Every structure is written in C-alpha cells, then in structure tokens.
Length: 176
Image 1 (tube, helix red, strand yellow):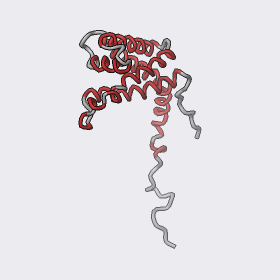
Image 2: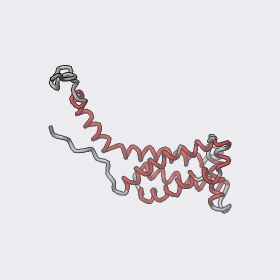
Image 3: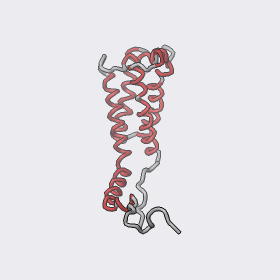
Image 4: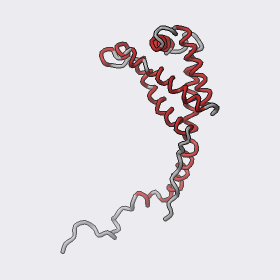
C-alpha cells in the first residue's frame, strides 16, 4: 500500500500557529487583559473629547463648520419654533454637557439619555435634506460630515452598554 504525502510524524510538518506563538502568548494575554480593563474607558474619554470639541466650537460664531446645518436642522425638527443662534447655542450646550459628562464619568446615565436625542439630531439632516446632502446621488462634504457620526453612534452604544453594566473582560487563562 502506498501513502501520499509525508507521514504525520515527518520533520517537514509545520508546527501549529499556537506552538509558533508560544513566547508571545503571555504578551498577548497581558494585552488582552489590559484592553479589557481600559479600552472602554479610553473610548468614553475620546468620545467625550470629540463631543466637547464639537460643542465648544459652536459657542464661537462662525467657528463650527456645522453651525448653519445645526441651525437648519433644529428649525426643521422643531417646526420653526427654534432656529438660528438659539439652535446653535442650545446644540453647543447639549454637546458640551454630554462631552463633559463622558470626560468626568459623572452623570453618565443622564448623559446617555441626552445622547440619544443628540445622535438623532446630528444624523437627521440625511433624512431632512436628502436632495442637498446627496445631489446626483453622491454625498456632499456636509453629508460626509454627518455620515461620519455613525462612528459616534457605535462608540456611544459601547459606552452606554458599559454604563448600564455590561463588562468587557479578558477570557480566562487556559491551562495546558
């Protein structure tokens, strides 16, 4: 009987990936443990920095590239009751409060509730002004500015899950 291929005990057999990574396994475990302990907090703080920055710019007339869009969106969402400078300042206050809460870790549950409304507001121009956001089917710079906020939604979901009790933990060590 003839066999094809080398026998299982052949020296040409490559070791499994887990065998080749033996010395790095401890480093990987340490990294996983560190990431499980600190990555959500790092995401919360970075989200806070971004949102606080967006809000702070709106306090300075003409400094925010989203100022006019924020005013028009608030006017549309409130059926004309709030618009212009009032809308921009209100947006600045909401963003700054949410951002500072994320940065400090204080009043996070209240901030997460406020963030739901804020996220709906910042994404709504895509629905409210589709012809202006996507003339000819392609996104304008304003549409791209709004669509990048999808990343903020994902980050907010992770932070909210953590605030409400979800935990990101490293898997237990396997013994050989």
